Structure formats: C-alpha cells, structure tokens
Length: 78
View 1 (cartoon, one colour):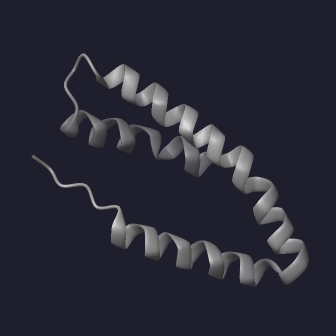
View 2 (cartoon, one colour):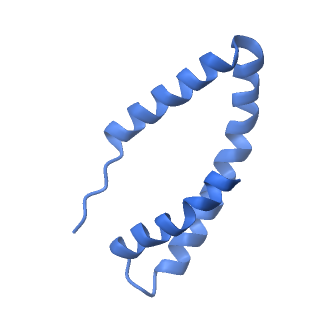
View 3 (spheres, helix red, strand yellow):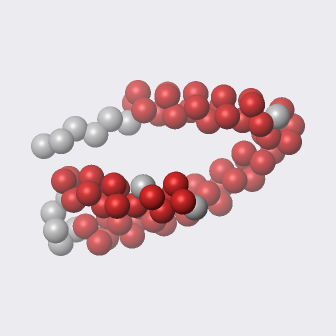
C-alpha cells in the first residue's frame, strides 16, 4: 500500500498537466475505479501464475507486460 499511496501525489500532478480543472475530480474518480477493477481481475490471475509457475515467472510476466504496454500506451502532452 505504501507504493500505491506514494504514487498518488505524482498521479494528481500528472493529471493536472493534462486535464482542465473542472474535469480533474471526474478523471481521478475514474482512475481509482479502473485501478480497483484491475486489482479485482489481476490479483487472482497473479496468484494463479505464482502458484502454478513460481514467483520469478510472475515477476517476469508482469515486467514484460509493462514493457509491452508502455510501448503502445504513450500520452502526448498538448
């Protein structure tokens, strides 16, 4: 939870650069809900991968997924 809560001020700052002031609360709410949804879906999947293949493979899969997603999900600043 420390890492999750520690990134929050950074996320607010980044969203502040891209959003209008009147949209910021809505965007932060949606971001929070999407994060919760992904945890609901991914936590059991990660648990299964760790149980079946080991924690090292899980970390490899997560790292590889982040690298692939980072390549395709770039946000350009206006």
